[in-house]
Image (cartoon, rainbow, N blue to C red; front, side, top):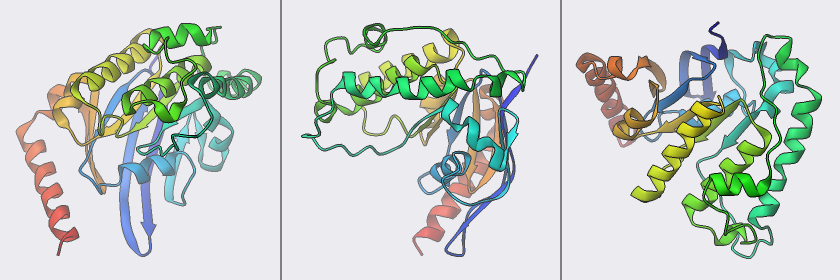
Length: 258
């Protein structure tokens, strides 16, 4: 049976009298790998912050069928990788230390798994070691390296190793491919596909590169303050939709630079 893991209805965010998100509607099925396409300034990060309860909004957000304020108790079942992670090179935390923090999240999830079960969601709980997840993400030789000494791609993979430890049923990534070279992008793409296909993790990621999303995602959503499209990759390639989205992005860009 198909089940929505996230339902957003009429989501509007206004900051300093400026409309950042305008009546967004979006439903995401369990098991979906969704790519959200949008130019810089389209509101993608704001959208994620609203989902995670980090900012005020109007409208309705439901996660695992828990709506608005009630969804706070299931937020620990979500893993979020923000766009920018600034880490001091001298910060004395190793890859092993970072991944070990996932066990705190896992402890909460195990204690409160009935929150999902009572809504009809299955959560796959299994034991997996840090050494195993490091091997999966290609960091088995980086276990004792300080995270400040990792490359951008290595840090992303270390964070994904955390997701494997706690088995988050929903993973949200904000522009994860920014500043990664081609090889690192492919490695990250392969990992995200693996999480989605082998571990049944629903993945939502934002990017402004359509070709990259077409290779990776099952479905595409196009956002630029409003939600212009949400559907399959084949539907996304409809010329009328792309033209409408492109014109909207150009209009937004011109407004920002007047």
